[in-house]
Length: 125
Image (cartoon, rainbow, N blue to C red; front, side, top):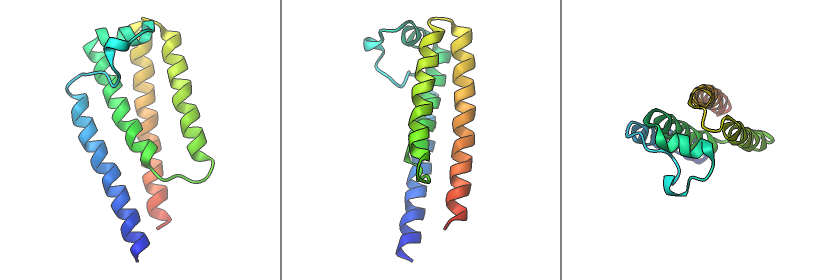
């Protein structure tokens, strides 16, 4: 019984964190320190309120997804996907259309991954 309580408490904390972080995205601040932005992609995100907001939304989802308990092997895939996103973002450079599309796709992927992880987690309890 303690395990189920602890696991459900962990899930509640993760979901609460998602809600809190999603409210931060409404402020439109990038998830990283813009004073240290070096790449064209980072500078474009910092210069655009829309891209900054998308970056914050994605960061909130990533925080929740990263905290979700996953089956063995899935955690490594999760990190690989994050690195692939950063590489793709850098490849966009300052192209705001490319960046916007990339962020929207990543946000949708994270939302789907979180949905899957929650359902999988709940079904295994």
